[in-house]
Amino acid sequence: MTTEFRSLYDVCSIAKIEHGDNGDNVDIVYLDFAKAFDKVPHQRLISELEAHGIKGKVLQWIIRWLKDRRQRVCLHGDYSGWQIVWNGVPQGSVLGPVLFLIFINDLDCGIISSILKSADDTKLISTANNQEDSEVLQEDLYTLSN
Image 1 (cartoon, helix red, strand yellow):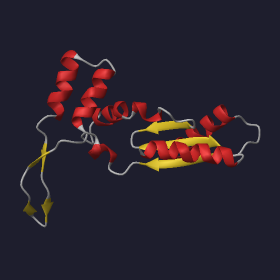
Image 2 (image 1 turned 30 degrees about the vertical axis):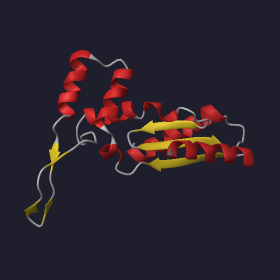
Image 3 (image 1 turned 90 degrees about the vertical axis):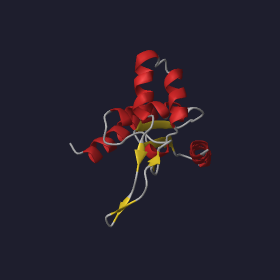
């Protein structure tokens, strides 16, 4: 099964389970947070890790893994100077997406719609039978954007 099909299957399954198979209309909003992995502030991530009970040697290992990261840009063979990276979790690693999911774990606080989180892709699922349902979904989108 391809990833896209599997994701759609999961979303439809959740919509059916949580909103029933009684003929209700269902809205599904796909969100892709632009450069989400790059925007995670290290200090806030560390606070989130501590709030989830991660401490001691594991927390210190993660802090050392994030600390003193540097990057530079190469354009047409010319390199910029090295810059300290204060935000972001490394992509292409196993730990990066896990840290990102911990960071967004409380994303659904205050959300009425069903939510499906998967790394930087998030889906909101909501019944859409009337104006009130549409307003609930809109309010959830507003809450997520702030």
